[in-house]
Each structure stands twice: as structure tokens, then as C-alpha cells.
Image 1 (cartoon, rainbow, N blue to C red):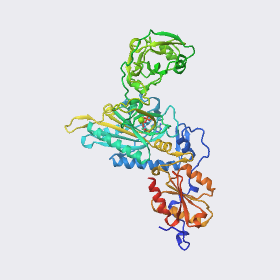
Image 2 (cartoon, rainbow, N blue to C red; image 1 turned 90 degrees about the horizontal axis):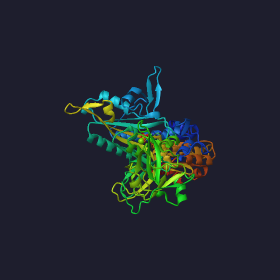
Image 3 (cartoon, helix red, strand yellow; image 1 turned 45 degrees about the vertical axis):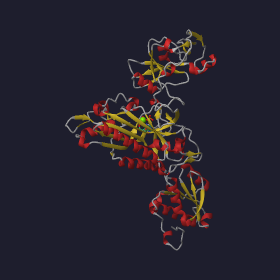
Image 4 (cartoon, helix red, strand yellow; image 1 turned 30 degrees about the vertical axis):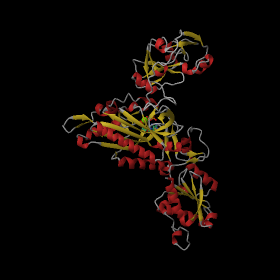
Length: 595
Ligand code: ATP
Ligand code: MG
């Protein structure tokens, strides 16, 4: 199609495409920043601030600006399309919920400080919902009576609040954030199994359409509870989670769910007599290992943990010197909700020794958990539970008969894959963008969400729940796709797919040409923005790259005189000179080519 400006046509004098007037850069609220904001550690946070997408109101509480909202709406549209396709139905549940419901489900106390508790004018207790199992179960138990009404899957995209202990990385770990949460109700195990698989597929489709590289990993069910759970992990260095995956098979798992071997004793050699040695001021394994010339693999690394169980306040965990304890595995092994590293006071009261000299030998007041991998250590080293002393020639089967053996360590690169056992594991950092749980009857039992089956028998509904962090998904896309100039958006979620950069806003031919390209793109169903500002070209180019518009059309005096304009692809930086007759078609085919 030809869009060459033709002065004889009256479209030129009319205000072009009134509908699109608000999409002119000069009228748009995009407060970009030149400098990297000091408060932002990770690249997505820096770029979202610099591109004028978000601003902080309080710790972990962000305003989303117009450009950010456009991305949010695009991600939400993908989520809605796929959720609707799966048969789920959108609802809007209240974000303020009464304490009674949370008490009924047993989570009011269990949820701890992350739950923001509030009271109304009559001193009735409420919370700002961090998730909505209680509210949705209450809704469904009140309305659904018969197996004929099931299955149903309800979802919402709603603000959540979690009073995170360490809000950071901008919207990635915020306190207030928007989550797509869905809750399914089925009559039997086959039903919930089917819904769960369907949601897993739906999530894969959503994240694929958002342009993300991700892995689906097995996960611990944590505070939400239930029997089975998968996380959707975007691979990125800034990820707070570590996942283990196998290159030989499709095994991928959150590290806390990787089952590691129960090593049997594999050494031969003499058990030498245990002996106390002087290690003045040498507290770390690194220091003692260097001092003695013994590798960290021969150390029994011993740590004291505090638990949330009143009757079992402290436990000791032991692993190999070059390994680390996984707190979730440890908590599961003990049967408590949570363990955290003990403070100095607790360490001294349990072991009689200051930090740095703790070992498993002779501990009577606490349970000691040992990781399987320390069993084969021959004549190893550990703290002597005395200041400035260690023990050498420690052997687990002779000296650690009081130890409970469990799988409590983190996997390391090169561990055997637990799936079929042939491959080796690799570790990678990941950002959890989605999480699905098979809850079973956990909430339906405690809250009495039952139905009558075909035989008129009352049964609890079987539930699943499924979450996606909207802004975290956006931040992850930026973590995965950026360069030194700024964001490189996956086209599907770019705030605008195309920017038409008008270089000389006072040159009539340049203006009309740019306006026409812009109008044509809108006519063709695309969402361009027109940079009509009276700014230096350098500023316009830099900002276009910072914000990351996938396709940039540059309309300048020289090229227009030759009946041409330039098309630049953000991802590759490649610039193409294109005749005006074919420019719209070329822009559209370039966009199509970007996926
Ligand atoms: P995390 O382990 O990162 O704290 P979670 O396991 O507690 O997350 P879920 O309860 O599974 O989170 O919530 C579902 C989704 O909501 C997560 O997969 C994530 O995308 C998003 N989400 C959770 N917490 C936050 C947060 N503080 N800020 C932004 N998004 C979040
Ligand atoms: Mg989770």
C-alpha cells in the first residue's frame, strides 16, 4: 500500500487519527532516568525505573506508570486468554478478608508476620489477602451442593499483600503485588489430576507466549500445603531460587525436592583414635582446612538451627564441609514448618561452645541430624564443642551413633540425577514466576466444602491452586532480555510494538510522513507510539532503546526526500532503508518475523 504524502489529498490537512492522539510521546507520561538509580540492585529493577515504568511509594510498594500498565495489560490478556481457554472462570474476590475464615482454615496463626492484619472501626480483625484459598473455599462451599456442579475452576487477577521480611528487586519481591490466582474444585482424584495437568499446560502456554525461557520444576508445597506442586522457573542469574536439572533426561527440580542418595559406607582403612587438636581463632572450615592441610570434604560441617516447634526448639544438622544444608529438607526431616539458623546464644546453650567450634560429638541436649553423604568420611574433622579446639579422626559409625540419618543437603553440580540415575545434575538460578499445587482436601476438610456424590454421599471437594505473579513475570522477561542500552522486549508484551520517531518536528513533509505511517499502523491493528517531541535525535534514539520498542521507524528529512524511511530492529540493531510505498508492510512483516 502506498502512503506517500500527497498534498492534493485532504487527509493531510485533517487532524490525523484522533483516536491515536494520546499515543504521542510528547503527551505521554514516561519519566525516564538517565542514571542508574542507586536503590536498584538487579537489572530489571534498574530498567523498569529508568524506562519510567514504575516508581516506589514505600518499601515493596510500587506505583505502575502508563508504560508499565501497558505491559501489565498485555501479560494479563495472555493470562486471561489461556485461562478462559482452559475453562476457568474469572471472579474478583475481596482483597480484605475476615480473620474468622483464616482461623477456620487454621492459617491465621500459622501464616506469621507475612500476613498483614488490620482491624475495622468495630475492632473486627481482617487481613489483606496474601492468597485466597479461604475466600474461594467459602464462596464455593456456600453454593455448590452436588457432583453435577463440579468441576469448577475460578480465577482472578487481584492485588495481594505479603509483608515480606526483605522486599527487594523492585516488583520482583514486592509487598503489594498483582497475582493471577486460580482455584479448582473436583469430585475425585482423577478429576484433580486432570485439572492439574491442564493447568500445567496452560501455564506453559502463558509463559511461552510471554517470550520466556523457563523450566517446570518439582517443588515443595510449603505454607500452602497439599500433596504435589510444580514451579515455573525463569532461568536468570538474579534468581533467588536454585534449581537442579539433568541434561540426559527431563528431570528438573527445586533443590529442596532433589532426593539424594543414601550413601552406604564406602571407605576402607583404619579408624584412628579420636583426638582433640588446637585450632586457636580458626573458626571457618576454610581456615581449619588450610591450617591442617586437609580438604573440606573431610570435615563434618555442623550447624545449629532454631525450629518453630516449642517442644523441640533447637536441632543440630551435619553435612560435609564442602556441602550445605537445605533448610526445607531439614524442616521436613524433623517434621516442623520452618528452621532458621540459631543465634550465638542458642548455639552456646546447646553445644557449650562459641560459633566456629561446634561438632556433633557428645551433644546430648539436642537431636542431631546427619546427611547421608557424611557417612563415608574416614577419620574426619569437626568442632570439639570447646573454644579453639577441633577433633580429628572422627568416624560416623563409631562416633556418631546418636545421629539421625537423613537427606538434608543441597545438591551440587555433578550429583547423580535421581530420576533414572544416568545423568549428572547441573544447578541454575531461577525466578519463580508461577506455582501450581494439588491441594487435595486440605482446605475443603477444614472448612467443610463438601458435595453430594452420585450415591448421595457427602464428600470433601478436591482442590488445586495456581498462581502467577504478573509484575514478577514482567521483571523476569527483562532479566532475560536486555542489553547495555536497555530492555529488549519480547514483542508479545512490549509496551508499544513500534515507535515512529519523527526527527524534525518542524519539517512538514517529515511530520506528515511520520503521521501517515503511524496512522496506517493503527489501521492495521498495531499499537505504535509516535515520538513527536522536539528533542535531539540522540535523546530520542537512546530512549527508544532504553524502553526497548521492538521496531523503531526513523523518519528524517534526508530519507523522506528520497521517499524512504529507516526501520531499526531493537534486538539486532540492524537498520534498513525502506521505500515509503512499502514501509507499513515491511514494518508488519518485520514484527511478524520477531514472533
Ligand atoms: P516466593 O517463594 O518467591 O516467596 P511464593 O512461593 O511464596 O513465592 P506463591 O504463593 O507460590 O509464592 O505465589 C504465586 C506467585 O506469586 C509466585 O510464583 C510469584 O510469581 C508471585 N509472587 C509471590 N510473592 C511475590 C512477591 N513478594 N512479589 C511479587 N510476586 C510474588
Ligand atoms: Mg511459590
